[in-house]
Image 1 (cartoon, rainbow, N blue to C red):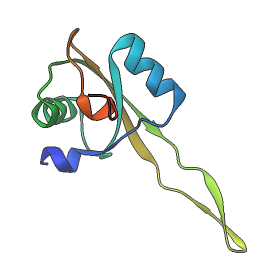
Image 2 (cartoon, rainbow, N blue to C red; image 1 turned 180 degrees about the horizontal axis):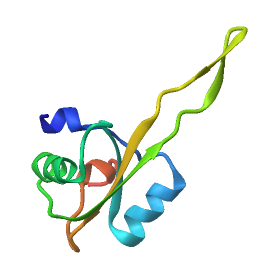
Image 3 (cartoon, helix red, strand yellow; image 1 turned 180 degrees about the vertical axis):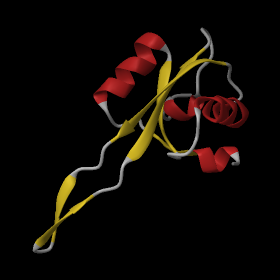
Length: 98
């Protein structure tokens, strides 16, 4: 898989992910469910030019949602929490501060 296929989107809108970025230098991504930790590490390092020290993954179960008159389940998805080396940062998450 190419790095663009492994990482689907960053998760930046939650309060927990912002605290992790500021306090522990950790960044959260939604990743492909078939990707393993080694593929996630290589994808982040090649896309953002940073050094990854640790990767934690978890599978988020889909929720039951109303769809018209019936009920359907949303898809399961995989979340990766990536810890960067001290001093490294991903500028994509910094906003418009320059």
